[in-house]
Length: 334
Image (tube, rainbow, N blue to C red; front, side, top):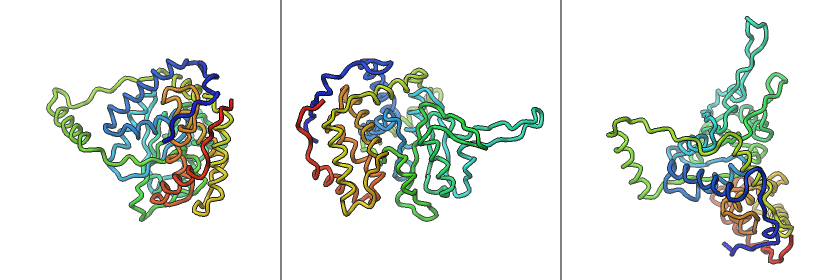
């Protein structure tokens, strides 16, 4: 990674949003520690999940079962002080199973709305590619607009609504690949991977310790953030300065992706906006109030992997080549 380039944005850095810079860093550190206690041995995965959360995005995890995706989602919901919902995607799942439905109340002679699992802070959509395209599309409005429409009536979702969707890349029988319109709603795609040996040893030791303790039920951790604080953090991220030369760098990378013969679908304007927001979140996680080309490069892999229309095995090489193609800005523009 290139050395961080300080732009004129650094001189513009100031307290942003309801939380100042020190409060923002402290809150981010607390969430980081909370997730590290739940998902051991995966600091880089935790960093990328935090970037996606603070960028007000949604996350696609493509990996094998049993690697801690549910544990991560539950810990994240606890950290942000919200509720957690899990959706097991199957071919017989209906759109109303996601958004909710209206039921007639004989006493009031009116229809009552019964909210679905999208009315949560963190929604884990397990094996999303096993749901039919019609059901997958029910998530589109919720992910893009943070609202759902049922029987012509709009219902607002939680401000911190965050989707973590999973799919197993090695099991394709009976699956429905996500279309480009659905993939482009995700900000990033990650792979958790297996933990290292030390983390697995610690996991086994903790399992024995909990079984022999007076109570086998682990205490539920308190929320890290108070209600509304996540929105404050996301506001601070969205307001993080991005200098003109850094924005120009992003636009040049998008243009290069659209001309690359190995990329079937170049970066869309929506994807470009999400890339910038992820870079702003990367800057905040690094303790900075300004965005650098390093931040653009740091999040390029997970941001582009979900939207370039290439095989996972080829994505890393293509993204590296794309970054090498476009010169990194060296001027100091505001």
